[in-house]
Length: 170
Image (cartoon, rainbow, N blue to C red; front, side, top):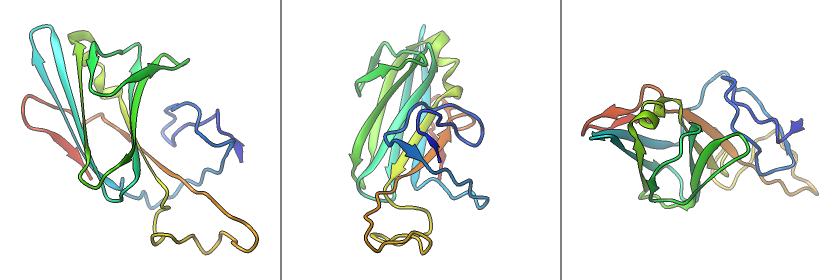
């Protein structure tokens, strides 16, 4: 196990501290799909870019966060955000319903050009390939209560559609 402040994705993108004191990271070669449908669009309007993100999770109670590249801070956003010590603006929504969530932000044209470096983080209490309210066979349960979170980090590079059509991932 490694301290949670050293949280990086397999691709080496640092996402900051996680909410637990220790993180067991198991790189899964099967590359499980993100348990949500994600659509992203960017519309240019004069010197601004209008960014729109729609996330529809497979499971109720999913947490969704958007993390912009360093020094990219929206002029206006539909969710409140904060700039962390790493210089990245992030915002999130807890317990997203099965109908999904929409996030919109207005950015300068220069900031909009950097959006391909953004990340969406999907967190669910379900681990991959484990039934609801279940746990993996390798996780011993006698006399122990476990709390698990699976974090799926989806880079937005290649998903952002310019204009009206939305890019998407599943």
